[in-house]
Image (cartoon, rainbow, N blue to C red; front, side):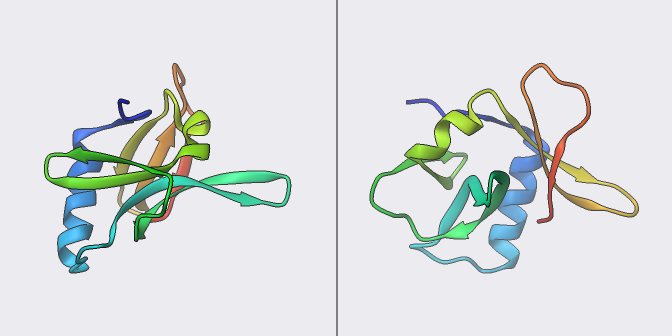
Length: 106
């Protein structure tokens, strides 16, 4: 299976930077997914240990895991990184979309 979302080169650069600067050690890996909140959800990016049933992807030496049940929410999305003057963090961009985007503080 292919990664269900596109990760831009800038987002990948920042994932690697966080991974290195936070001194993340195996078995912890990058986790991309959703977090359910009452009747909605939000997109999340972080570091976690793999769990049974996770899908695992390798991109330029970086291991990324996604829970199987989160794949439908991520299909076609794009993970980018916004590095603005007043705000920075990962953003999820829906397929064929212009703003709004979904920001995740990284």
